[in-house]
Image 1: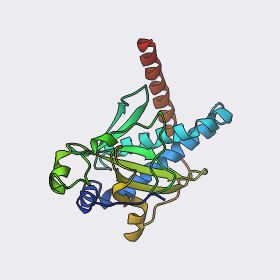
Image 2: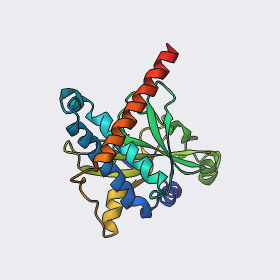
Image 3: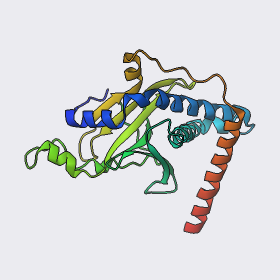
Image 4: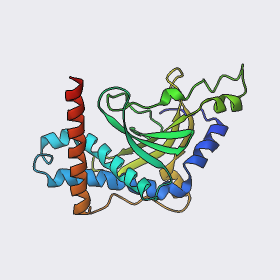
Length: 233
């Protein structure tokens, strides 16, 4: 299991920018996104087969992105949300902006403390968590933190094969030059439980209109990706 090397100043910063007041809506967005993707698979003749099973992880990721962006746009989550093209290739990712200096990217992980696996569709700005915040020989820790203009925090999450949420965390990773460790880590599900609340299981039903909209959004995204590839060729 990944160890945490917490830096108190960064921990407090993450907790302030990604507050407990947003936990319930955040968990709702993730669980509804997974359910949305599963409902689309179940209702589509092609996606309900073996091909759909192969794509289930990508569809669930797209569903989570869709629902979280919608909650942000409606003001139910206190972040600015945008879907941006990744630096390499034609993949897109969700960017959540908590402030001018704090952004987050969505990453699926095997457990609450695990780092995400390196895959073509996971690129982030972890490198912006520089300089090495453990190096206090030249400047103070506070000065080092301030020198990082935009800090990257991952929104990590995971689920069972049946689509039940296992964890959701706000986690600030070390830069690639440092062994994988967490500078700050907030387990959202555990924070909800400590507050006397518990996250609800995945929804039993999904609004068919939401499923249709999700299907149209995926189709539009695929058309844009196709167009971009043809332009590059």
